[in-house]
Amino acid sequence: MKPKIYIKFLLSYVFFGIAAILVLCTFTQRSITNYLEKHEAQNLYREATQIASKYAANFTNTTLSLEDFQVRMESLSSYLSAEIWVVDSQGNVLFNSSDSSIGQRAANAHYTTLPDFDPTSFGNTYYTVGNFYDSFSENTITVFSPVTANYRVRSYVLIHKPVATVTEVTNHFMNITFFTVGIIYICAFLILLFFTICFYRPMLKMNSVAKSYAKGNFEPRISLHSNDEIGFLANTMNYMANELNTLEEDQRKFISNVSHDFRSPLTSIKGYVEAMLDGTIPPELQDKYLNIILFETERLAKLTQSILDLNQFGRHGIMLDVADFDINRMIKTTILTFEGTCNKKGLSFDLVLTGQELFVTGDMTKIQQVLYNLIDNATKFSHNNSAIKIETSIKNEKVLISVKDSGIGIPADSIKKIWDRFYKTDLSRGKDKKGTGLGLAIVKEIIQAHNEHINVISTEGVGTEFIFTLPLSKKEVQ
Ligand code: ATP
Ligand code: MG
Image (tube, rainbow, N blue to C red; front, side, top):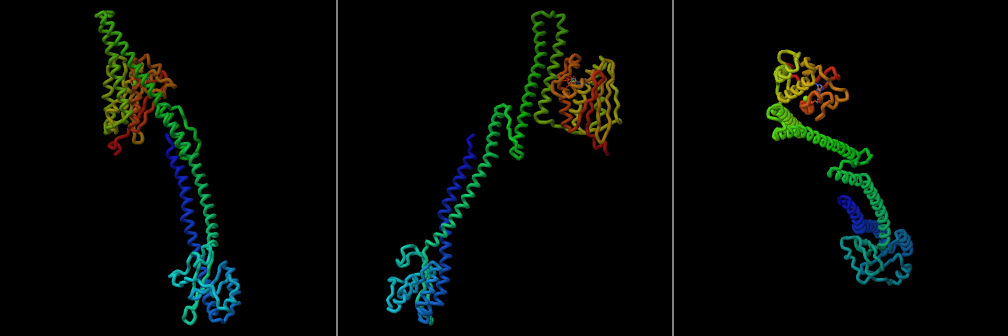
């Protein structure tokens, strides 16, 4: 797998860095500069209007001595780090805070003149940025306030301050901003690193392991020991691999069992048929061997039916056709099927049924199959001339059905295995050659599909009892 997501993250990270630098160098810097210029201009304008109202009027009217005015303006200009000018309407610079020869000029009435000075050029704004009629070699903020006396504009107070002072502050702000963004960028890198270690690497690991599973190799396991969702997912995948492994083993076992169970009857059928055809078995003995062939064929048919049943249960679950029926009646009709076997072995049925009728809810055909399999086992593994007890009872709105024989019993170490497909105890092998070992597996599937339970109590050499439950019909409850 190409690490697409990871590359996307990395590219986004680099793009984020470049975009942040570009935005900082253009938009942010421009915005800060504009804001500071405007802010500075506002401050200067406030000063200019104050000078215009307090001092410049006096200056025009000569009530304040020029020297006094100069001293005050010089201290103010050094405080503001700016130049203060007073200019008349013709562009004559009447006062310049940076020019100490102002006193003489006033006396001689000889001023520096701004040739193209046009007070209307400011328009509606109160400040400009530039070199102010080539008066400065560097970019300068100039604010402008008219001096009025007797309702006439006498002159203008101008304050000039180099933009460089604002740029210095801008640079200071930019340094802080760059530093902050730098820290955010490093934090983003740490998050990326965290993501790589905690999510991306485990995901890669899980992906490669999942690929192995897809190829049928369920051996690899994911070793992650985190307590979060990723760790949980890894555990789930390990669990899944275990299950698939077991399933595969079960399937192999199932196929080898099926093949074995099919092969032995087929081999004997083939052997007897060949022997009959080539005359090894004389015609007068053929009946005996044809009966064996019939027995083996029946066994094969039964085996095929059982496998089909189990396969159907496994794939779609069991579709139940649920209805109310009389379980007592079903027991009575089912035992009739075993009349022949019972007569042969001298077996008898001892029925202990609750009530005349006992209605339960379930799938009639499937429950009949359960009863048939349990009674079939009881008759197969009972000793001759013994009794099989079938009992029904009611407990907590459940009907308990018990099939009890006093036969060979099941060894304790086999009890758990009898529900497995194809399992037969060593005790039973000699007694029942026809058995496939699938009967109880089918019984269990059917009972589980009804959400009910089945239990077995057995003692080797004493007997076996199977008890299963079914819901009592609503009819019976009322
Ligand atoms: P099939 O039911 O396909 O004819 P089976 O009877 O051998 O074959 P199961 O009904 O699944 O298969 O039973 C599995 C095994 O459990 C039997 O082979 C037998 O060893 C043991 N078993 C089942 N019921 C009894 C019983 N009542 N008494 C003693 N052993 C039993
Ligand atoms: Mg059976």
